[in-house]
Image (tube, rainbow, N blue to C red; front, side, top):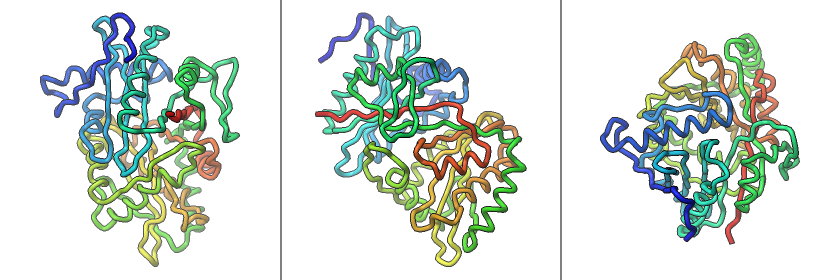
Amino acid sequence: MTSLPAGLELRPLHVPISIDAPDAADFREMARVRNLVYAEISGHDDNSMPADELLPSYQPDPSQVRYCWLAVLDGEVVGRASLDLPQEEGARTGFWLVELRRSVRNRGIGRAAFALIERTAREHHRTVLQAWAEHPETDGPRLAAPTGFGSVPRDHAARFFQASGSTLEQVMRVSSLDLAGAAPRVRDLLDEAERAARGYRVVQWALPTPDEFVESFAAMKSRMVTDAPSADLEFDEEVWDAARVRRFEATYLDAGRHMLITAAQHVDSGELAAFTELVIGKDRSAMSHQEDTLVTAPHRGHRLGMLVKCAALQAWREIAPDSPRVMTYNAEENRPMLSINERIGFVPVAYEGVWKKVLD
């Protein structure tokens, strides 16, 4: 077992039932430090999330086991580490993070946390560890993704991943859209997409998903990890059913967050062919997020990606009129989706590296 730096404790995070419970202090502190770390990396608070909105996503879930530890240095919480283990039969992957305040870098805390993560992954017979990290633009040497699309600076985070034995596999583009400024363009592009998507109609709902669409929505969610461009990353195929959809929805509904799902339905068959998700927290004046977007393989070539994105953005102006912008994430090699975003008016604001380590 790796010895810890002096004064460091990697304390398992207790997840309370309620954010107001007497035993919720550690969770509230984890959320506070999480938000500080993200602000230090990005220079803004767009990725901040209140503890009560974060808590539902930490409740037990049969599809995934989450291990989380607080990094406590001389009695002060200075970061966190976590490992998510999918529970599909034969699962071989683990998804991890180590996030620390800038003031405690280069003191061996990250190495100790990763050693704990790797040891836990091996105990659960996982062979692949993968992680995402934002790499703010800086001058100096860069690392190119092996996909041939995108690069990241060889910054502190990149050096940490390389020292851990991880390799850069993919670059993700983080894009932002000015919602108010995009409105006229979104209307024109929606008209254009509707003409190209004859035989399809737009259906929309706020969570929870209507019973009539649950099975089709589950089928589309199950394709996200296999149909989206994933470079040489590895994902265990996910099994989604109605029960998993309802658990997924609860993490938003219980947090008071609002999700709008916009789908394209094939008129003749009634099959859902594409979807996108727009999300905002309880503060309806904050930034919005576009989360999963997918056009299923049999229905590609009908401008359905543009259709659902523009229909969602048009409806969003009524739902969250005070939200200034929406952020989305795409692989740099996903040119079809990037082209849609660029036509709508999304602009790059940051880049993330996706890192992989194969355990021997």
